[in-house]
Length: 194
Image 1 (cartoon, rainbow, N blue to C red):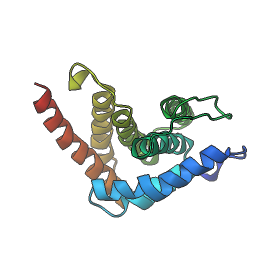
Image 2 (cartoon, helix red, strand yellow):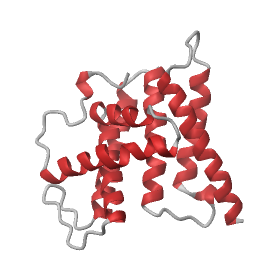
Image 3 (cartoon, rainbow, N blue to C red):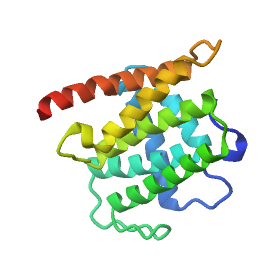
């Protein structure tokens, strides 16, 4: 189960109209794509549940939503008065930065446990998706942010398997499926870059 109520994603602050629209687009369009991509139905409710309760996932969802929407239907005159962003890419960068800040704050204020590890793995998976949408390029796959997030997620997933006396739960299984899928795609990508 993602974070406690003290970490409710939208907290008590006022949400801008654009932010509301972007989150709704994520909920209706982007989240269902994870179930298709990873070929497992629980991914959709999992990512929505975490986006509602965890600020780092919420802001990543907003960034993914903006770039996905812009990919499907490019927005020529973009402006968000709440952030000052003049493009979907700029808005996504702002949201990505907020996501990283929130994740770091959670990591700094929490003791390492199974739930925190799962949150960090999910963040890495979504960060990889975001980097792909940002058209992150590197001269080699191993030098990319996608590779960095994948390496971290793989290590954390390995650690998650060794938590004492706990059977894998549905969240852990979804994360394992997601990381395995991305690893296979990364191998194919790396082969094509050589």
